[in-house]
Image 1 (cartoon, rainbow, N blue to C red):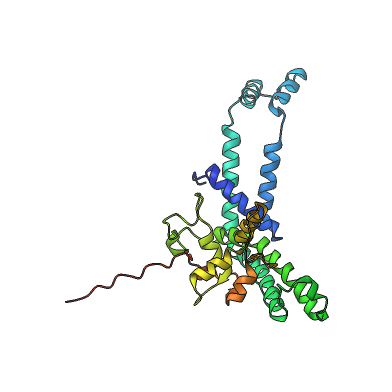
Image 2: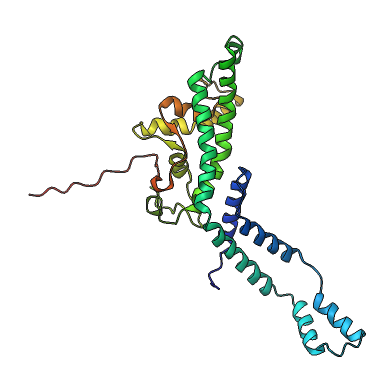
Length: 286
């Protein structure tokens, strides 16, 4: 068995990602679930079975019992050190991660399918009726248009809710060097145990912005944050000239810009920094 057990921080990140995926309704592999259940049962176990066996053997005059051995085991059981529990937990957690890795691509595809379904629903809805139409005007719309108006907001909220799961599944399905060499434009690692600027991965993971103006794409992506900032300014008494809130969050502005919402195939995923990469220097031959 390998001695390369996960660090506490790495395990916490793994568990956070698993929770994000299961929150989206995607089930974990059964071998992961079963091993986690056994580990949980082990960690919850309390009591002193060795001491109890020693007491019974002594009281019942059990000649078949090895009293010195039971005494040593009872002493070990009472030890305040957690080496055994730590070793069992670490080994189990490592095997859970290994078992997950065998299913990681399939799990990403399941989350991606959910995201793509919501993307299609939103795209069809906004193509049917303007999702930003004021509610007082919607009453005059057709039944189909009213359904599209409501579906747009529901689908947009679902996309927002699915994005953490999509990112988690992608992170667990990729090796450390599979997204842009594992490093984004600031030089930080994209995955692994260290915290990173996730936005440069979240955007291309969920949006195909090929051929669009980069600054405009980022403005649309930041629509939610901008709306929250504007609300704070209004609450403080400042005047905001142009309302920036959207019923569809960032997703509607991205669609209006011409972007395509979709879960990116992992072999095509590259960081999308806020500033375009500098072109390669051209060497002039004299």
